[in-house]
Length: 262
Ligand code: 4HQ
Image (cartoon, rainbow, N blue to C red; front, side, top):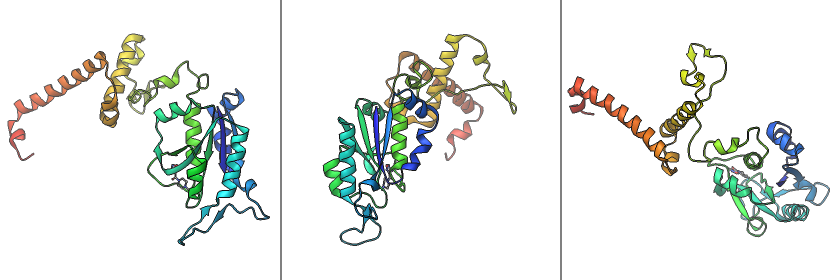
């Protein structure tokens, strides 16, 4: 995958490119990342990339000419790339979008600053608009890094384990089961006995149960979107049965609580 980033703050990307899985993906040539400084495409001695908005108002707008030149250069270097503008107006980034971006040979990520880019860039030079969430950043750089990070780890051979990416939260509308490592007891809390048993099939069942209940408690919206297997339905029914027993025993013990104002 060929990433080309257009930014006026190229140094921000050293944080992403110099560490961990992304650094490894670059050295393994799974990805290539080119950072183009938009300022290098601005004419004149001052290399100005922004200007005041027509119609007045506060803030500055990114001038169209340097952005257009930078995007043309990026397309020339990595032909077949799709151009993405990072903006709160875009489609909200999800694991499904990360997977779909993986199908392109290259991505040109346009990072705006100030109030954003001139509208004519949006309409004539951009294929997709993506937002990383409903909040306002000071620029598109962090959003571009989020996309590079999420897409890169989906490339086969980039993560440690054989199919580590397949087991992730969201890849299948289920959040991850609880994880434990040594020591066996930490500040009075012990690792669940089941995980020490060595019964791999039982451990897998425990993990599925852990994932399902955690998803139900923390992200009901995800669980509703999942196509549940027979085994998963049985696990959820077992929990429902146990909860019904507790509720039933309470109502036998103190019928008052059920006829009260709540
Ligand atoms: N931006 N997801 C760049 C964002 C944003 C987001 C605000 C983008 C400022 C100039 N980008 N403009 N949320 O908040 O991608």
